[in-house]
Image 1 (cartoon, helix red, strand yellow):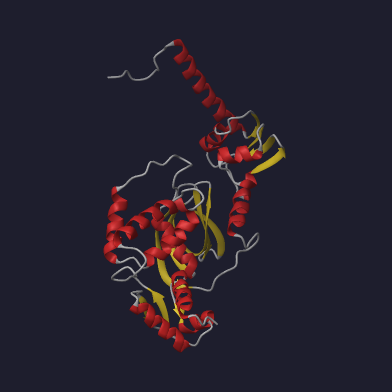
Image 2 (cartoon, rainbow, N blue to C red; image 1 turned 90 degrees about the vertical axis):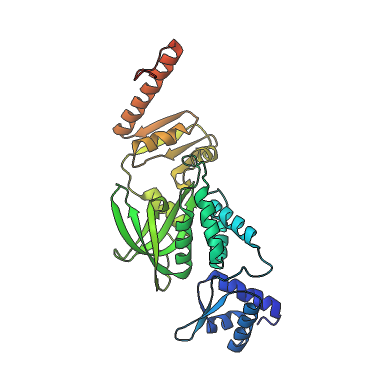
Length: 335
């Protein structure tokens, strides 16, 4: 039981920030107090400026809602706008802090007043970021925020999705987890129409929409329960169109740092060499991964992969020879 009132109120506030809605009974159990004490503490939070709303239902409950002003002793308006924009940028793919930024963003936007949300949206629309392929943000922060809240609240979400072959489709899912890997984001979700688990690329998801329908949480199937391990295992065994495995004369850690490949795709052979599975659905993707190696390698690949690499190498060689000979490139003359 939490007898220290300030500590109990901080714990109560933290609970309200981690989930969309709590029943009074659940809060009382978590805090080890009576329902009457919870109601008093809620009133104290409201007096301090925290926008706690009562909800209707079987037993009633509470949620932290958007307020007319930021709660005292936290952030002023300018700080709130600056931090929200920074967190949205970080949540989009800055290495190492995406998940932490996303959790903080979900908490902050939950209590952000409407007038500040407009300022944040205007600033976000007026700014741009130069992103390098394979290194920059690969998911829309707004999409991340919606899906993160759905994972937290076990809420069914619908969205539009572009399949691997480019076909548009609609999906209705129970989001479970978000996983970041090498500049890419993945959503683990249970597809309600197929009654099966799926892994979705977030850069193919558009227009995510919460349905308001919450369901009991599901446990991940094998090889769960770790979401990152689940995604790594599924991606490593997923079918691809073009097979290519390189035996690279470089340490596994060096290859991983250069290619941003999943750990399951790299197998150490000894201290100075490893194998890299660079199979993919497109030929340019295979060539792109091999080009980042900056080391000698041998290749076991489909004939189509070998032909594509040979043609690309010939184009490069012709360009180098023309440059060495001082020849002008073929094509339309410059104006």
